[in-house]
Amino acid sequence: MAMPQRDETIEEIKRLDALLEYAVMHEDEAEAARLRAELPPSL
Image (tube, rainbow, N blue to C red; front, side, top):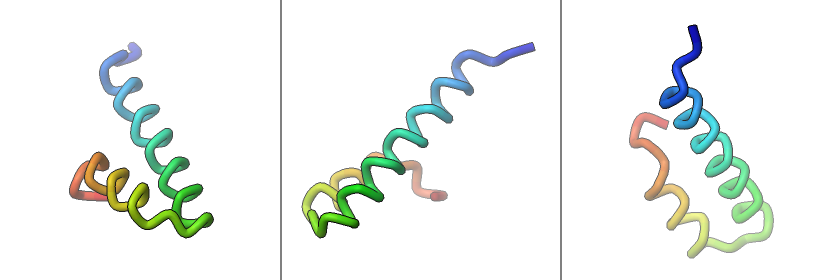
C-alpha cells in the first residue's frame, strides 16, 4: 500500500537535493545555505 505523504516527502527531499547540487556546482553559496536550511537535519 502506497503512503502518499511519505512519497511526497521523499520527492521534496530529492528536489531540494538536486537544487542544492546545482547551487553548489555554480558556486551560489547563498542559495546553497538556504536549501541546506530546508533539508531535514539528518541529511
